[in-house]
Image (cartoon, rainbow, N blue to C red; front, side):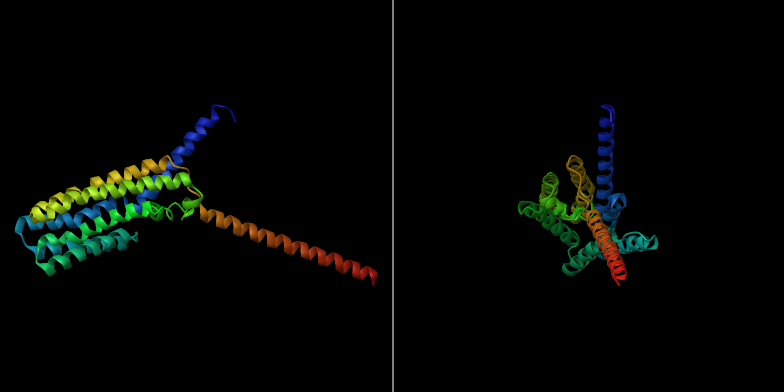
Length: 256
């Protein structure tokens, strides 16, 4: 290898690592389609409510479009976890708002979920098991190997989890006062506006931290290699035992 080849190979490896990271983040967080599915129900709710102030029609429309998104994914044989999470979120909001009769309560379950998630990111990071690592570990096929075998990667996951936690806390700091002071339409439009930008910022920071981190340890590949090596050892032992048996049998025949 010449001195000119090594930088090229290093650059290629870095590009491959970044591409893998981007793909993993898209898979974990749903990509563009997942973001659209997250925004559309709430956008439809606040649009209809702004026009006619009718809680029932707004709630029904939001729930209906969430179900349609799930049906579309099922028809396309695509993963439905993000669409299903959207349906459950909308359903909780609809039930809560219908129960209290306050249209603003349509947003409250989602806001409480965001607050709980922010706390979870921070608490798990302080406990040494950053939540973003638990989420992305299986996607990168490293599971929890980063905890003890890849300290640089654990540090990157900790930074990313801090970013998610603080960004979500900042979002809650804006939304919860509006829940008390603003009307339903104002709260709804602010919430829709804050759906994507904080999410994109958190994903981008996660990508930045992980792109600079050591490569993940593919524990699945390790297990497959160990299983293959074990099979080869057993095959070699069986072959050796067969040869020994043939040699012993030959000696017995000669002695006889």
